[in-house]
Length: 112
Length: 113
Image (cartoon, rainbow over all chains, first blue to last red; front, side, top):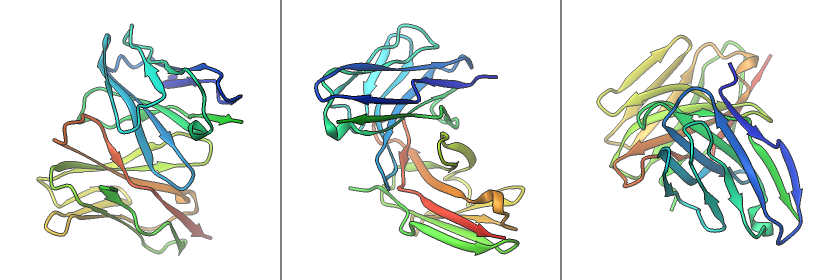
């Protein structure tokens, strides 16, 4: 009954470092999403995927990359961390575009 | 340009009373609306949704109303319980060229015992 699992839960990075935020789901959902939530703001879409091998940009894709080699996994890559990327990152999945999204518990990322 | 707006950042109500959370949108292409609830240190959890072909959807203590002409929707919680204390996000989807949700900034609901 895992649903959407994100790792790590917390991470501190130095400016210029890179890292990958992991997201995996066990519900066989085709659609997967990455959002970021800044303090006092709503969730903003970074990237999304409608199936293995297919990804597309959201509202705020700059500074990030994604890949979707399997249905289960949708990692988010930060290549050159910047302070503006300090945020809470949420991964989500859904059966279809008109179905509710199921969210992971988030990764809190600080870049100093 | 915020296409989905929740103008009240916080709301406090007494246990047993009605909670009304509001949401306005600007994009007339939105055709599906959802409410999510979020507790601290957890991801958002789906609560209730409504399609633009309806004006009301009810699920237990939760009812969502949609007024398309005013581009406004609201979430009613009756009766409110202390466990309802959380941040509530309104989200919308439509033929905007992107197959994903647009979220409001959230309203923090505090239900006082």
